[in-house]
Each structure stands twice: as structure tokens, then as C-alpha cells.
Amino acid sequence: MLNSPGEYKIKTMLSLDPKLEQYILNHTDPEGDVLEELNRYTHVNILNPNMLSGHLQGKILELISRMVRPARILEIGTYTGYSCLCLAKGLQEGGELITIDRNDELSGVSTTWFKKAGMENRITLLTGDALALIPGIPGPFDLVYIDGEKTEYVAYYHVVFDKVTPGGYILADNVLWGGKILDPESERDESTKGILAFNEMVTKDMRVMNVLLPVRDGLMIIWKRNNEYPI
Image (cartoon, rainbow, N blue to C red; front, side, top):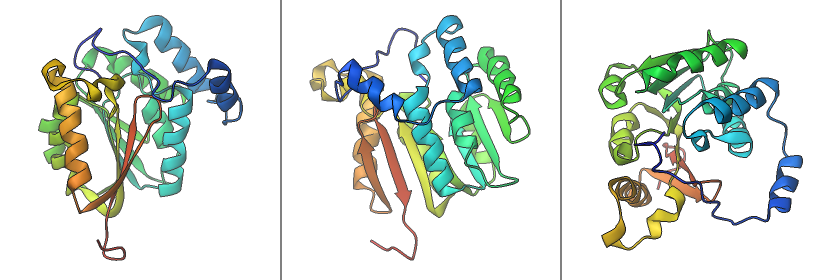
């Protein structure tokens, strides 16, 4: 999710040759009919379609979720529901995913696609300010995906951390922020400052282990340490 329209521009940090990128997609499991249709619908009908996770990142989210096998997932930033559907594929039998978005104009879009995917009984969409809503949502969560307001990433982390089960995971999107994280300090906008503060905070947090992957606009995987694997 973004703070304002027109603020964001995708920059592929690996600067892949288009033919190489296509090769990668050709050797990655396909999206599936519903996600492919949602991808196309979003690009034709919705403002800022680059906010959509897309084929490669969506498949990464799905595989992470399938490896974790979460009973409960929390997502901050729904948009049209693409990443939500990818994450939901890894839920345990009877598991649930709660997703939060402040844009009530898109709630009808995402719920329509949840139904098309047969996931409407596993996904709960809440509309409003995530920082106001999360304290009232009982934990624990095995997996949290942060993709909301960039200026609030640090606050999201603090409000969800105690709700993440030990050994659970937090994923954070857009942590390279189109390369703006390398801008001189004098040129940094508030969103860039928010991402920089988040990245620095997580890296220094000894309660977790993290890796920043140069996938699309940067995906950080954060593992909450447990007693089995101390510092």
C-alpha cells in the first residue's frame, strides 16, 4: 500500500534483462486462473496497479506461507487482495487470515475476488486504521505481512510483535522503496524516512533474525527467535 497516488515507482533492484525476467517467470509455477485474472483486472481498472504483488512475489509469499503452515495470518494492507490470496494458500486446515486496509473503496473489489477463489470463509477483511484495530485483535499469529503506510512501519512492528508466536515470521514489503533508501538525507521524503527507520530498527533487534531480499521492491523476512534457537 502507498501513502498517496503517484508517489511510487517500481524499480527492479536487480535490473534484470527482460528476457531473463521472462525466463524466471517461465520456470516459476503459474499464478493460477483467479490470480491471473485479478492481476489483469487490477492493471486495467485500479489506480496504482504496481502496488499489486504480482506473479513472482506472490508465488514467493505463497511458498513462505506453505513452509510455515500458519494457523493464523495477519496482513496489513489488502489493496485488491492478490497477496492475501497468495498467503492464504498456506493456511492450515481451519486456519484464518485477517487482513486490514484503510481504503473502504476497495473492500468490495477484494471480497469479490476472495469469493472467486473460494477463500471467503478463511479471510476476514477489516477496514480502518490498522494501528487502532490491531490492539483489539487477539493473537497469536504465526505469520504477519506488513504492506501498509510506509511512515508507520515501525509502529506496525511494535504493535504486532508480541502477537507473533515465538518462531513465527514477519514479512515486510517495499523495504527498498524504489531505491529511495539511497537518496541523500536532504532529499528523503517521510515515507523514505519511515522505511529507513524500520530497516535499521529490525537489523538491530536481537530478538529476531532477518534477511532483506532484492525481490521486486525489497522483501524483508523476519524470524522471531524462540528458546530453541537463542541469540
